[in-house]
Amino acid sequence: QVQLVESGGGLVQPGGSLRLSCAASGFTLDHYAVGWFRQAPGKEREGVSCISSSDSVTHYADSVKGRFIISRDNAKNTLSLQMNSLKPEDTAVYYCATALWGGSSCRGYEYDYWGQGTQVTVSS
Image 1 (cartoon, one colour):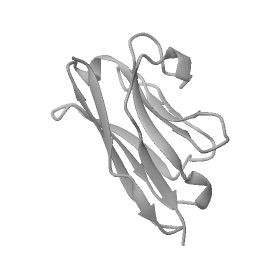
Image 2 (cartoon, one colour):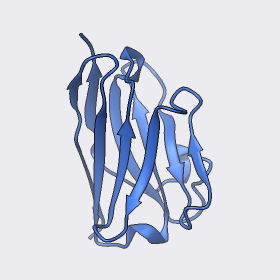
Image 3 (cartoon, rainbow, N blue to C red):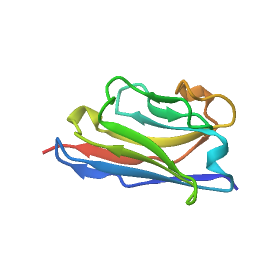
Image 4 (cartoon, rainbow, N blue to C red):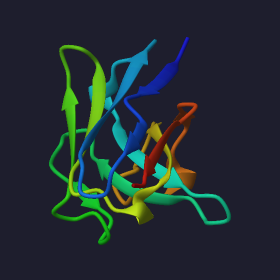
């Protein structure tokens, strides 16, 4: 049974850091493109960061370049997102997802399996 479970969200002050983790079960994560998406109330879902199955192509939204880092831990079958220098506008529910084909361009419709999301709130 395919399952993705996010963890690591919470409340953090502006300028702080947070590390999100996505645990996969029922399939081998490193065979597929994977990504992080976020959605704030009243706003469209956006691709934050995605990485190809070979790890040769990595995408970051312009708004997070230089602040966020996506990575895999193949031994643990997990995906992570290290978020630094957090801003209030980063506040959203963050989702991890896996694409069976494609997915490197970080378009949500290409992704087939999704986690339930974890809330990130950046506020003083």
